[in-house]
Length: 81
Image (cartoon, rainbow, N blue to C red; front, side):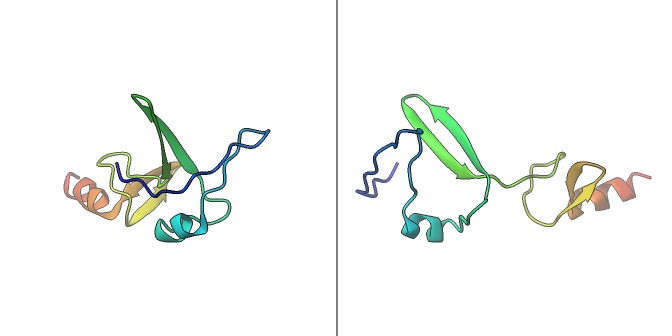
């Protein structure tokens, strides 16, 4: 893990502010969803990117019903017909 040297305090409501430089680097915008993970004694934040239900790909997804499916998996499903 790489240290940024940035320290922020938790406010009374349990919130912290992500510095603008980090938000810009990771393309995090207002209203973006964030995933929260815990690993050992670390809290990990990651921008939530819905993925294909079959392969986990996060790019080139389309909505089928209420699920995301990537174009590559759609092509494979069409071949299986």
